[in-house]
Length: 326
Image 1 (cartoon, rainbow, N blue to C red):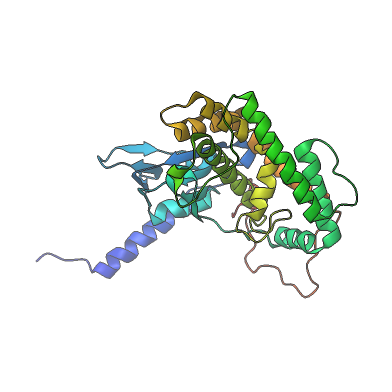
Image 2 (image 1 turned 90 degrees about the vertical axis):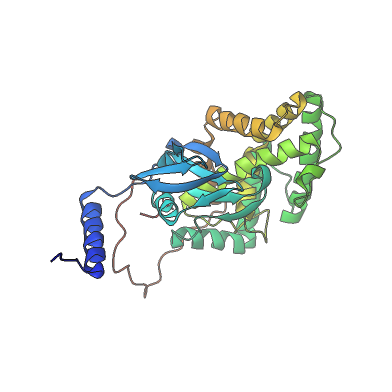
């Protein structure tokens, strides 16, 4: 007579085996943001963890291995599916999953929320809610972006207006430099093809910058939504920080590609942006720049309340950035 092992016992045994395996393996440690490559775009494939590896499986079953722990963010385009195991592994190694729309421009969702460091969130909120500190932060952003101190005795709204005028002028000068016809920055998020080539290139380029900037902000332990110049948007702080680097990195790339008018301008923009990020060491610069900008507010980090209780289970030490979840 053949003995049949009860199904519940088999499941329990399997889970016990998985548990024993995970306890024997060393814990995953996030790599510092400055040591990672910037981004990868993935389209038309199923992302999964197979044989312990993070892979993309195409329609024919071919596996492409992705070094998930050494990438700042993965931009997932339409036609991509993600398994639970893949999302969990990306979260453990601190890699941001960003679901994007056509040409990687329209953002649908991100795979990791802010809030890993409450002390930094409170510090950021304290700066944003203090009018004097907020103005100091905005003035620092202006100085870093344009290489000169902003006019004195100006409000945040007035500085925003001055900044907008300078940005429009910069677009015009770059268009002249690359010999591209320029009728202004126009695009419709609901109709991608309605924009001309130069605006599509610029939108694709800035989307790349926003992706790695959000990954860096989350890695540093701050909230993408709590901005200083930009407010009221889910990515307000992303726009604030990205604007400091925009005209030194991705905007010239957008104009350069538009001037060549390749058959696939958005793809060309992505490749050029990735090269620009590497050449300018952008991932090494974003987090220190965030700290420098916030320090301009001249407020101290909030101290824990006297009645606060430490966590029952302390977080393990991590070699990653402050905002990476151990």
